[in-house]
Image (cartoon, rainbow, N blue to C red; front, side, top):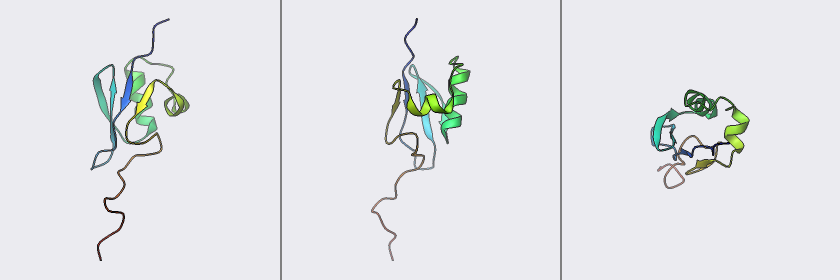
Length: 80
């Protein structure tokens, strides 16, 4: 059996979404777990589903896990 390809989900971008790479190739900008599922299916990983994306040890989540889709505000509070 072939080893799974490395999947890297980048930290959230300032405008929202996270870049997804498989084996070094950018597949797209995901705005949720279902986007990643679709990218993986298009890359030939037919067994991809939301649970697999959220729990797979072969997905490297940078800047937060599958529950993080936007950046935390800088400074922690709004200026008054």
